[in-house]
Image 1 (tube, helix red, strand yellow):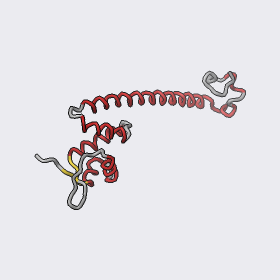
Image 2 (cartoon, one colour; image 1 turned 30 degrees about the horizontal axis):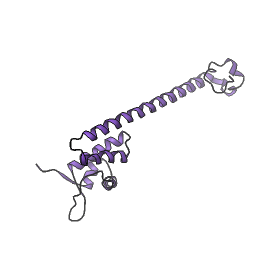
Image 3 (spheres, one colour; image 1 turned 90 degrees about the horizontal axis):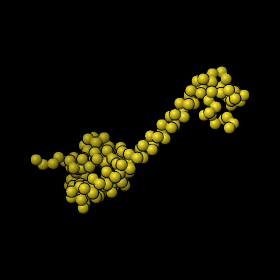
Image 4 (cartoon, one colour; image 1 turned 180 degrees about the horizontal axis):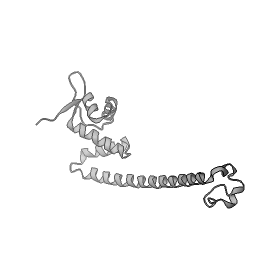
Length: 149
């Protein structure tokens, strides 16, 4: 069975990318196809479709196009796929650590916002006096940046 081929418009519809993005990926060397029609239009294969879907997956995981290209370029001298597997594994672990750090910072920000929400909800009509005379008896003085220490 022969491999399907696609013109850029069809490939764009299958992937949800624009033709311009596909051309850009091609220019960067992320796609392997070199086939063209007699009129000069690019012809893409099922293999290109797989590569584009892989690129999209890696981009969704915050990989840069440069990182993706370096992984794809390993394929030239990596018949077994072991180099690419090893690099991907290392990169996935690094991205996971970065995501966990971001998650921690987001959770800290959420906690801080929650504290402010609770403070404002309890302040009621006395809000305009904050951080004035109410500071001494404020239930939030342990977390408030306006209180004197």
